[in-house]
Image (cartoon, rainbow, N blue to C red; front, side, top):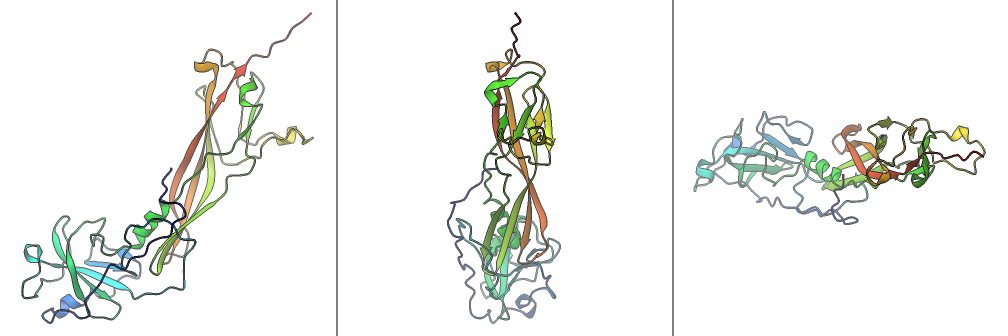
Length: 299
């Protein structure tokens, strides 16, 4: 997975939700108050009329930040939808009732309240289940998706014994790592909310080029010829025995490959316990094994 967004840049925080200081005098009590007891989590509930966020918005996020700033606070923003006849509020300032079950693709007026301030109309939006406020309020889920996109995994660093160009039939091929694939951490933050993911390598897929493959959940160290314990260095899993040479194959080699898989565990400002958010495969390293028959001359 190679999804990089301007490495080393900082996450641009833009406060977009410029709410007026007071609600329209003609707004009703129902319009000025969100649904009772909004859920504590950030996000939205498709079954009700509420959209809940702890900050306003992020525009054009361009990078990652070094870590969550847990001390930052900001008023909680609660938003909901009301009917907007013909897609606009009534010219007199009167808007419709709160919508309990918004319809995908329909126009609604977005009402928001920051902290304990009075609710105010923000703008008319097109309701989408995946983006219920039409980009005006960013949810924890969206910040997490942005954080996940920051991961970029490198090709695995693999050493083989024997080397790829001098493989021999009926002699085991050993694969190992000079250093084990490291964990990676990425963090994104907007306002007081943050999402942090830790990607840990869990397994690797080895294809040998002859139709066989091996899945390993251990990452053995690379073979060291100066280590006197030669047999003790035999890999637990990453090994293979070619029984047929490669000289009738394309290029006279077996095209082998190594792919490492990572689990990404996520914690957020709203979810302190780690949650498995994704399992992804890193880029594939190709290896050309030139496997020869061992020749002997008898006199």
